[in-house]
Length: 204
Image (cartoon, rainbow, N blue to C red; front, side):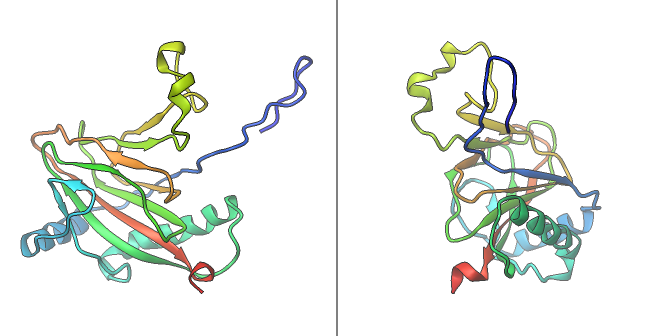
């Protein structure tokens, strides 16, 4: 971004973390029912989740997920153009369902060996656990401590809180660390699908 005025030649935002949001408007009831049925039959897996249930890898070609994956495919194309990725074939490498009940959360982690990561919120009641992205500049708070700021923006924040919304799809870089805050809703679960995208050029 370049802003010109009489006292400043250029204003440069030199590094950025691209995160794209989409509102899909999909009826999630059948998908949620499918995921809850899988949860009853499987213990799932444990990676970053503390409590809750994470499915084993799912197939992105499963017809139940097609309405979501169609939007994901379009989003990948837009994301790739914005980030100037080389042309090529993209595919979903991992797709997992996540169910967080009361106080369940996910520790800080990132995703390796992929080019785009994403999450789709199937059910996101109030206070179900924000998604936090951490500023990659680990040294930021040494000199730019929050106590020295009158407010927070994209330049001086060490974390970004994203409040989940039902029907919202996020695409973000796999290299940015993130975590999920505890679900403090005692009545409803936080249910989402997370996935990683690979580029065949990078796998060759």
